[in-house]
Length: 130
Image 1: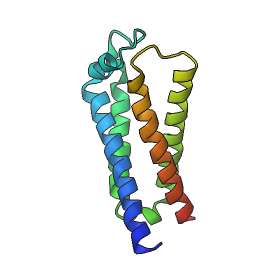
Image 2: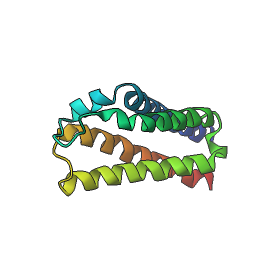
Image 3: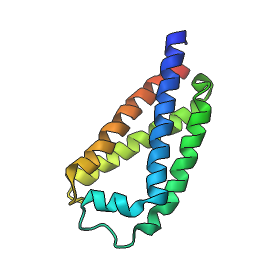
């Protein structure tokens, strides 16, 4: 990888880490706020059951942050992040287009766009690692 590609790779992995960490904090500490923002009438009355996912996301964010120092040597983690962001974007698109979600549209489109962009960027990075 060239110096420019390494810097770009680091920025991609750092951005992924920040996204995971922020979503993790929100799910861990403020799940009720996320459900209120969604405006989905199907949101559970007690959103506390999703707190565990916040812990997982924070852990993934920390792992990505640590891997960002040398992303070109972290092929398994970067590949896993690419698969995860791809599946997140696809699952949210499915939810949106097949009527499973009745809340505010922006609430799904924002993570769809973020995760789709991350999936493409992480896919680029994965292709450079091989």
